[in-house]
Length: 199
Image (tube, rainbow, N blue to C red; front, top):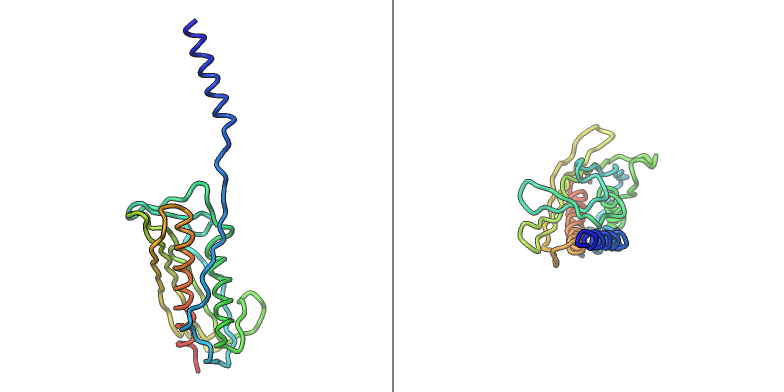
């Protein structure tokens, strides 16, 4: 009798686990605040600026939202992700930022077939929630190269980084913090490109 009771309890528990709803998978849009007031608007260059697709370090080239609980380690949030890889979203935001700044005759994707004198290449090196000390910080690191295509000349190269405290120790906090860090970094890149482009 005891064995039958145990078997029935085990079956009931198994049935409960089968009917329990699985956690909902959520996808977040990576967005950044509007450009800072210090972004250039008046300076104009006669050149057309082409922006190459942003590349990314292999681990960050996905829709996973990455976090770190200790130095030298990386993990991903299980039930939260990006709607698209951060490098692709960053590239779209960068194009819009540069075009809106009005510093160049025109700004276009390098893959558009438009002829341009200047080329901007960017590489997303890191984008993650540093959760080693709760609630943690959002960290974004981007390297950039500006070159003159007509002269085959590298004009400038720089690595940009932005770190922003997050409000909560979870994926939602990471998303908001990374968006703010991305906005800061994009403003810096726009100013840097304007400063290093030929007059």
